[in-house]
Length: 71
Image (cartoon, rainbow, N blue to C red):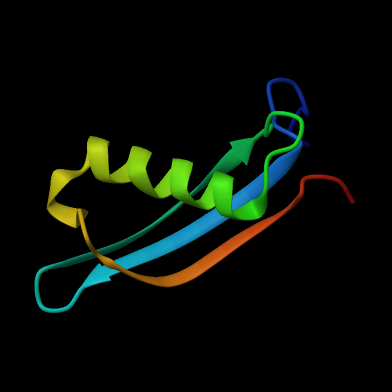
């Protein structure tokens, strides 16, 4: 069984696509700062992915999910 060590309070998944060019899905966990909104986290994650993968800059978002990382 996986350890909960170093996991954020929320689990996220995002899929991006530039039709005919590139597409991909990424996931991870994150702990938003107090007062952050879902939109704040979305823009932070998307801009971070675009910075790491310039070929996806401006891609269409096919899917985004941000949920509590607790069962």
